[in-house]
View 1 (cartoon, rainbow, N blue to C red):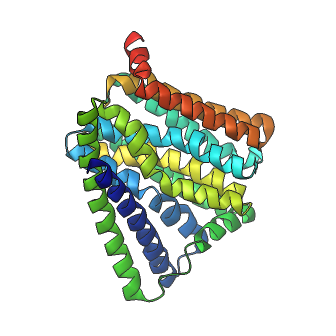
View 2 (cartoon, one colour):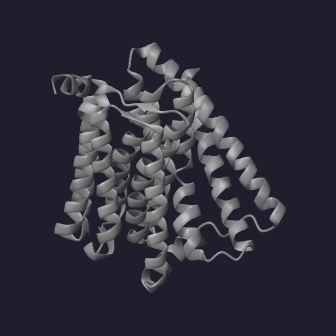
Length: 324
């Protein structure tokens, strides 16, 4: 029954996020917002709605391990599982110059997470600063992209992926409202079932958040990257993951800690944050050194992610963090 609840929660999150993004894009179009702005904000942030709502629900339910683990685990999965899968489907070519700013921001967010991890908590004030930093970076990126026709075209194409439905104002509003309600309900079911599963099998809530919940809430990014790779839009696959990883740390943990200050579990501080930082550096190094991700590199990413799962579920990761 618990597994059925988890599956139902994931389905509700996926459908809710899809309706939410499509409804919001349609509303933005009716308000004559440019496709580039839609791509930078609604599409980029909307696909991470499951992570936000799940982490918020977990924090308010008194299980911060799932809230923090969901974000750290999602970032690890985004790089190793999602980009690994996309690269296996079709090699990803990416000019290092195109990732210079956003890659540096993603790395900066990962380093910031490591620093916060050493303190063992994220306070409301720190969360507000993180959210302010994201807003500032988004405004700066918008001004930069307006002068870059290639980037503007990329963001516009990303927005076009959600242009089919709905058309009318009322349908758009219903899609947004229904999407929000579905995501919230799905998050409540998922968090409750994840906590129950952890207790039934004697697995820590941190491990459940880092793996099962993290992969489930990253499914929108996985779908986007797989479709982008299949359609030969490698730039969208890379851009979606880089943007999502930055948003996960600065926005999700920022918002959640402002509502409910977060305590970071010792295992995550001692092992998983550093694993996430290493994966981030590995991704940027591959792009700088090789100009993208080949099928062999993608397969390597998937193997590393499989090794990470083994470390988590055998308890080795927890042992490493304790020893550290």
